[in-house]
Image (tube, rainbow, N blue to C red; front, side, top):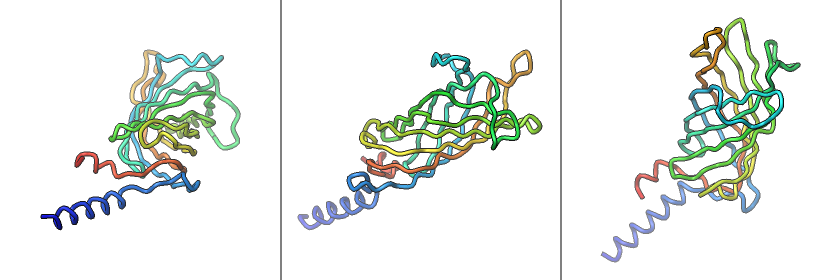
Amino acid sequence: MKHLTTIALTLNLAVAGAYAQQTGADGQQTPVKMTFSGSAGASTIDLKQPNTTTGEEDLAGNGTLGAFTFRFVNAGANGPQPSSTCSGLYFQSVAGGGLLRFQDGSMLNVTITQGGDCIDLVHMVAHCTRTFKINGGTGRFQNASGVLTLAETALPLLADASNNPVFFSEAGTLTGTISGVALEDDSRDGRR
């Protein structure tokens, strides 16, 4: 019986080691790639930025850091801005931030540092990018830092009485690097 306990403990520690990698203590950055889908529309939250409109996205996905939900609020310029990379209308992000919540209950805080929406009026699609600075969080993300880049495609789902799109479907990726976090397989949470 004693040997079975030792074997079980050894296997348990080996499995835990395979599922968690410690980063950040040595400054190592881990590449991140996550995919998501969800919805977006106007927000009741007002970021009090002059000449902006506040929007909100509610996303869910999976990837390097495990299954997650991501809600973020973004203040974007009211009118189109000049852009050398957008052939349509470009609306620049001015301020914002969000929270990624993972299945183990850990949360990752982010703030928008740059980005915007390139709207193709011919095909009625928007290509959106946001760069997020990681500002720590809770649980395994308490000491996290790094940068994530969101790249998504938005399609209009619903228009208002004036035929202006007001509700959108979103799908895309979050990529970048993170340090200061133990990477875990969130599927393990159900076995605890």
